[in-house]
Image 1 (cartoon, helix red, strand yellow):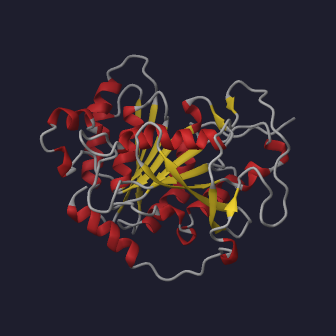
Image 2 (cartoon, helix red, strand yellow):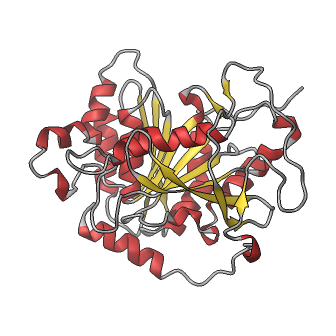
Length: 338
């Protein structure tokens, strides 16, 4: 993450006007479970039975979620402290499930997962857990319109601290943030939610530095993740922590990963949905990336956000207008009971 990119991402968040939250404040911090009733009294689903081999039922261990926010439709954003079994890193993860997840007609169905990553350092919080940015509301609205999937949204911290940027990678001698993203966070979601067993129900989304990590994860693990929305992203690793580890840095370069995947005949298809605002830099670089690497199983598209800047609000607008619908077309959604 370049200094300018990180600075713009932070400044972009700081200048937002104050927006009234829909949170139920006296619920914040209280223990919660995604398998129980919603705050408005709507009961949780009846006990689920795995009738479709594509559905992975939650097998635990159950995470200790606390209420971080409650949306106007009664759904909650929960937060838990995840001690990564594979990465060894411990950090916070926020998770939200759409209203459909609690409906009895979907009690035996899996739901697609969107892992959402913030810009800048993304530590100790992930700004996508803020209700005023309307990511969850956008998912809800598009699902109601039949234009998007009702995603479970997982929002982990991006970096191990607020001093260094780790490129979402296992940099030698550093916290293993690549494994945190590729393994530990998905394992948490699988342990606690009904998810798809295949990559057809898994995607990443990220803005700025988080867009780089989201893009890299999909290209590095096309057997696990099928699609990504990368908004205003870097496309090359640039953490100073790579110094002395050039071979490992090259192995985590999205361009090299895309080139290798594009050269695989019959390789797993991935769908790269880029976003860029007309008021930010980087469009030419993304166009060059698409022209060079969008071949064979690598599909890529750039959505240009008119009057959009390098900030989360512009990127949510782009997702509402086009990008969430684009990745929803290539991912599986929940199936209601007959």
